Image (cartoon, rainbow, N blue to C red):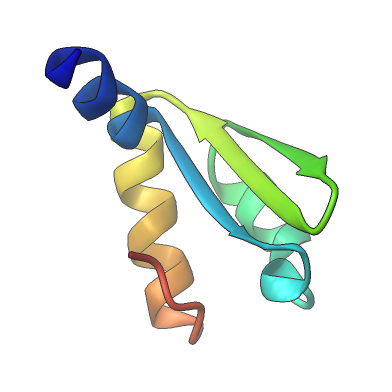
Length: 66
């Protein structure tokens, strides 16, 4: 199941619900991603290329992305 886990990691970012406060609109404007709220978490979903860019964008804006 390692390949599926690696693919999932490259197509989504899982964050605490408030992590995108103040940057969500810009994130969705700059990148083709879907933001889905799941309880106390938010999932950012997109292609591997978009997720890489979104991850870099979030890190530059002070959002810790593992």
